Each structure stands twice: as C-alpha cells, then as structure tokens.
Image (cartoon, rainbow, N blue to C red):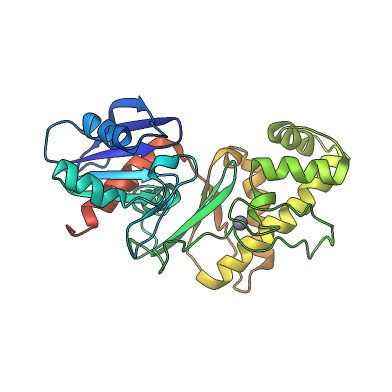
Length: 297
Ligand SMILES: [Zn+2]
C-alpha cells in the first residue's frame, strides 16, 4: 500500500494505491503555493499517521542528481529537495516524480503499453510532454528531462509554412511546445489565418472541412508529427500512447499517427500512436509504482 499524491498548482489530491494498482481517493486540499511549511504539512495531513510510503506526481522536473524540484506553478517548492524534506519531517519513504513520467510509468504498466517492452508515452494538453519506459523502468536521464520532446526547435519542413516564433516557458525561442499544445494550436491558427478561436472550435472546423482550419491542421501535423517522428527514430518504441486534452479527439491522434508513420525511418503497418486516458488516476498509480520501485534513501 502506498499513499499517492497528484499535486498541481491549485490542488493536492491523495489516494491509497494498493497491490491491485487502483487508486482510491482519500482527500484533497488546496495547494499552498507560497508557504513551503504549509505545503509539506498539507501532504503530511493528507497522508495520515500510518507508515506507508508516499509517492508524489507533480507538475515539475526532479533533478536526479540532487532531488531538487523545478516547479513553476508552486513557487514555494521550486528548488527544494522535496522527497528528502518530507522524509525528514514524516519519517517515511517518499518518492517524487514528474507528472508526465508518472503518467508514462502507469501507461506502460497498466495502460496501453502493458505487455510492450518499450513505451514512449506522450501528453498533448495545454503544452506537450513525454517520457520513455523501457522494460518496465522509467528512463530518467542524467538531468531528469529524458523524453521532453517538446523542447527543441519547431520546423514545418513539409508545408514550408512560416511559424510564430514565441519564447517557450523553458527560455528557448520557437520550441515545438509553443505550437504543439492546445494554446499552441490556437496561436498557430491565429498566425496563419488571423482568426482567434479555441482549440475545440479549431478541431471541429477542421473536421467540417473549413479551409482555414484545414490549413492550420496541415501545418500543425507537419510540426508535431515531424518532431514526434524524430523522437520515434531515436527511441524506436513499440507503442506511443498519447494522452492529454487534445488526445480526446480521436481523429487528431489518427492524423498524428499517419504523419509520424509516414516520416519515420522504420516502417510500421499498424498504428503506433494511440489515444489514451490521462486523468489524475494515471499520475497517482505512476507515483505509487515509482516509490514502490525506489530503494530507501
Ligand atoms: Zn521549450
């Protein structure tokens, strides 16, 4: 049994995850984003007095060299060695994992990746992310950023379109992440057509054959499919489950899959990229699997 947490900028959700790998929520609290003491106390309160290990999925990157977090939307925890701090306070084992990595580990273990040796799990939501699981183990990388395929230059080499050149949250100009997520799709549509619309409206217009939306999606698929094909060439995974808000549109994921398979070196006759559920449950299960698998520090 593990007490698992899904921590975002607005709420902390806690659940019990048992050997059957299902998550049963036990409580939630608003995230104290400015007060680190209160933040750690909220986690301790939700975990309760038992001695079960604690697994945390959080929207930040954990540096495997020193366990320090980089987390933009919870300023009080930014730069803190959260796992070590909680272990010292609570006297129990704690594992902290980036949310995309937690999703990937769950997806590879109990999701679409179950039974596959290599799984590159992708999130296409507000922004884009990903993580690689090989033979049931997460590939962390030396700085904790393995699988972050969204942070390289966006290129539209098939369509030759000019792209909006926006500075990414990571600090670099023109990352794939600035085009690939829901906000990016909206930005691209406005750049190409001058029309302001939200991502569901753009996707609906695309499916109805609206010429502006068809053009936007052609360029979007060029950028996102090209970057994902690059990653697939490097990792050559067995399956690429795609979750996140935009993955609810099955036609979009099918179009991404067609673009990726047309542009990878290794040819595949069956779909590689498949839509899956993200949801908080995957993060909780992934965080629990991770701490169960981590030796005590
Ligand atoms: Zn970036």
